[in-house]
Amino acid sequence: FLPHLVASMVEVEESYIMIKPDGVQRGLVGEIISRFEKKGIKLKGLKLYQCPTELAQDNEHYKDLQSKSFFPNLIDYITSGPVVCMAWEGVGVVASARKLIGATNPLNAEPGTIRGDLAVQTGRNVVHGSDSPENGNREIALWFKEGEVVEWTPVQEPWLKE
Ligand code: GDP
Ligand code: MG
Image (cartoon, rainbow, N blue to C red; front, side, top):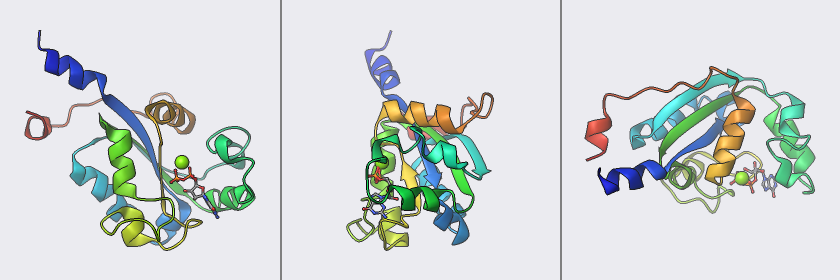
């Protein structure tokens, strides 16, 4: 069978993308979803959700940042209103989503990226994206319940992949 097909299957990844409370409050949900949708990656999960404090702290979503001075502010920020949780799938989606999102500090984010175009401060940078395929899987399992992530085949697939 076809080696190039096997190679592309290996690189299929999942990324957990989340529109943070500032993105929801500022009415940027459609704009942000649209940028990923237009790229051609596959949406597998989507919901509006009020993040419980325990999920944001307590060794869960932001476990790597617990020792940082800004951690309490980060928890307040992320739990301050509803977020939009998304699971996206595609070849190399983790890195490509982070390129679409741009640098952590919006002042360093390139124009054309979500943070570069839509935000001004690290503490209000409108969107989260997983930083590795492992964290993509881990975060999707953390934020979505059984049955909320949907396997499906977009009709546009032959127009995206040769
Ligand atoms: P990301 O992967 O680009 O989102 O960046 P990190 O994983 O390093 O940090 C996670 C999130 O913590 C960032 O998106 C910011 O919302 C927040 N954060 C990171 N560094 C700072 C900081 O120096 N100050 C504040 N207030 N928030 C920060
Ligand atoms: Mg990160």
